Length: 266
Image 1: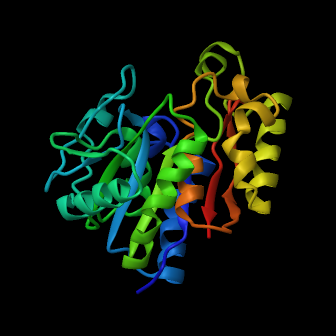
Image 2 (image 1 turned 120 degrees about the vertical axis):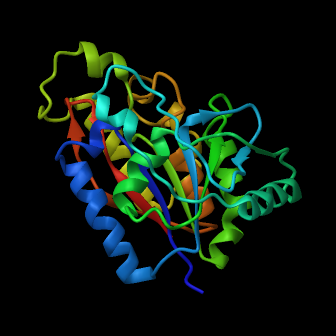
């Protein structure tokens, strides 16, 4: 059985799926590259920045629907469907693993795929034939907590499950919408400094520094006024297991402030 690396992706805006961009080009290529090296996952467990609960939660529907959790984008996005099946069995195993590690956890029904799930997966695995379980982040629980969640779920990798975190390497929407930066503007210094720090710690396997990024990383609060889009990264890092290191597999920036980096951890 193939043991997949874990993956963190910056999913971008919902209309990433409609327009050419370096990030979309990466997604469309990387799914094929991952398949050539590791084969096809039996299932995908993906933690989305847009699914926030007070306890770890897992979608447990056989056939999840869709969530169009946004406004003001192109009409055709509201007709997009990613018809991948769910996996109640995987959701149940995930809940059990967390319980064994002392975490309260739950399965929930009726949670459709939000755009943190269907945007990247529709480009990585457009056939939509791999079972997907969506996992909630806990926006107020911090990076260290999400590392621990990932560690508890790491055994799933031994059974062909691809564990992913879907968020954004940087995510300051005030700057995106009001900063006046062109779509192709280079990274602002405060964005680049944060990006470089994350890269250095990921490559060094310095997961303890990532756990304390809020204190240690330059401009952490400017790049993440709230934490929900960063937390999928430490989750994926933790799920790669003890001693894992990160490799950046994509880097681009939109409007000078939205870093679209992606990492594998193994």
